[in-house]
Image (cartoon, rainbow, N blue to C red):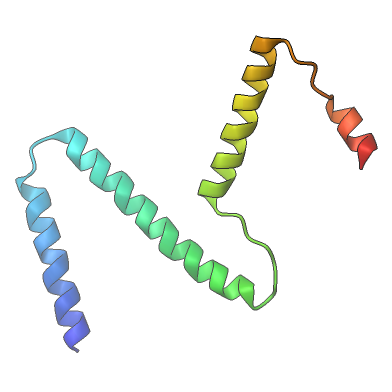
Length: 94
């Protein structure tokens, strides 16, 4: 019961703070942060369930980092004139 009361108090305090904000950028940042936090909680729940099945899980943030690094490497290679392997060449290596 105490946890529900504490949760309600904290939620009401946050909503009260949001009502006093008159800057759209701040509200959008708070909304993005809330979405990320909710996503992290959902992913943690899914990850916990998946751990029982021993399946590897890659989070959205990890996947975005992988794509960003690959895109950066590709742009750098084009800029500096490196010869990259084609998808077919990489497939034949496997």
